[in-house]
Amino acid sequence: MQSTKLKRSRSINLSAMRKGFSAKPLALGIAAICLAACGKEPEQAAIYTDVDDCQNSNPEFAEQCRLAYEDAIAEAQRTGPKYNSARDCEYEFGPNQCQYVSNQSGSFFMPFMAGYMLSNLMSPRGYNYRPMFTSYSRYSPYRNRWIGADGYDFGDYRRKSVRVGKNTFKSQPTVNKTIKRGGFGSSVRAKSSWGSSSKKGGWGG
Image (cartoon, rainbow, N blue to C red):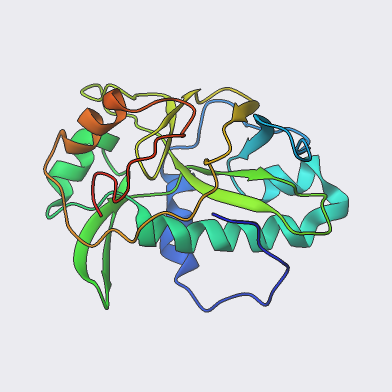
């Protein structure tokens, strides 16, 4: 996503999305101070598992951590992978790692957000954010990996920070169509870990 200024909290279904953190917590908390390289590429970004993780690392930016988390949850629901059945979703993401969603776009199953990436947290111009997913499925090629909603692999989910390309926080297309089991995994294998592809529409646009 592009840089975002502080704003009021939106009215979104946070309770359902938050279940992803309690269903099967990550083995290691991911925390890092978020410093973006001004005008330079690639830039440094941090991945946090939840609001507390971000706030514990950046207590003076507690409100930004909360707002960015809410932004990422909304973005996950808008751009994340979607399936017709819980079985197909859990095949790729693991048991109890998927939720049922019904909104104006339709009804589908999608994985819980496992964390969120942040950069420019300390910048007065606003932070950059994007939702992150991971898999606990033994069938998945991205088991225990940090995966973006568009299918990019950012490495082992125990990593505290990542260096990302200039297009990492670009606005992603809304995903309305569903995919079959294995579809998201195929996309992950085909994409660069820097998230700098010029392709539009992605795997589910």
